[in-house]
Image (cartoon, rainbow, N blue to C red; front, side):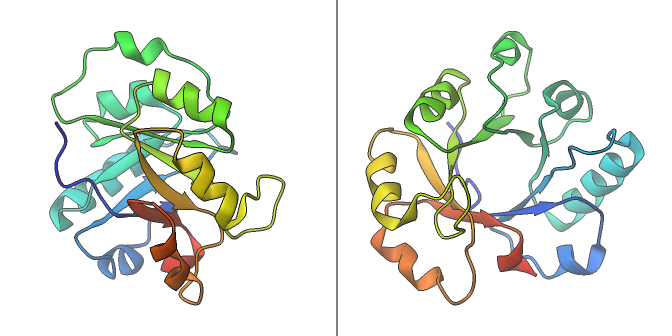
Length: 175
């Protein structure tokens, strides 16, 4: 079983040593860049730096590359419905994490064997907006750990103690 899962996840789309240096031990990094082809050299550079700093590093939506480059795991976005990765040979501590915006997407993440589900959007008022009440209801529909995602900031983080979540994820919270 996976012990010591991260409590905070920071989404990045470029390598910035100064931002990584500010992170504490219970924060993991997820490299997410859907608009361009992934540069292996950059991923290796980030991986090596994260290993040096003892920070977990995940690659978004490219499970084969995450396995090949010996990363800590892979992040499966809500739009990815594929379960092919269940047949891949994995190292013992390789983790799958993924995001969902609805109950049906949560069920898909359970089928994909993720350890944590990033439920979105808690505070950010976009098309996936849940709000606190709906978030609490949705999080009760799974036995997976729930990570709060969407619009979390230093101002509204105090509201997280009223919902059942194992951690947070985002960009602006860490900036």
